[in-house]
Image (cartoon, rainbow, N blue to C red):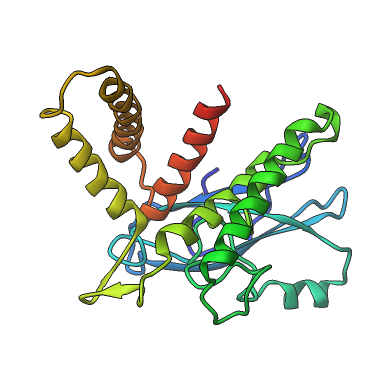
Length: 248
């Protein structure tokens, strides 16, 4: 859907909007102010009166944040409220975060706002995320909620695994450069591709090569995809692909 420039609010028609769980937002990186700081996206269904909020709190633009021009936001259905209350809800509290927000500091359900989680809390967060996904598939299909939320939403699997990779870093910045998980992933791919050329062809080594080859294939496909997705978004896609691969 194309949104006219210089508009913060617009109306569109849809025959059956249904229940909203995700919104994908992006722009073409053109204009004088090509870098946007998006607080949140609000979508209201005038027929049902339902209002959905999609927190973001991150930049869209080249050379800022993780360089993403597209972001996928996870939403929530807001309780019924007046127009005045709705305006107050448009500002995103720090603890409400979408899948690609800066979540390096805390697992919301386990730690305080400005406290880094320890190893035990990170392990607990992963266990909670995995258990929620297992419970999802054990429910009858009609009773299942959104798998996207369990993977990419607040306290989802992607967020929990981000905490694993960031654990042990004293600072989110190293040599005045942002450190992203995807940078580490790309270095791992380069290492695997180098070692595969010099290892023996024993059975156990061949099995490891097969797993590494699959991993490198997915990373390469994501990196070369013709989309303007930032480094955090690429990591999110890799986790979703990996989860689907294990399920198959």
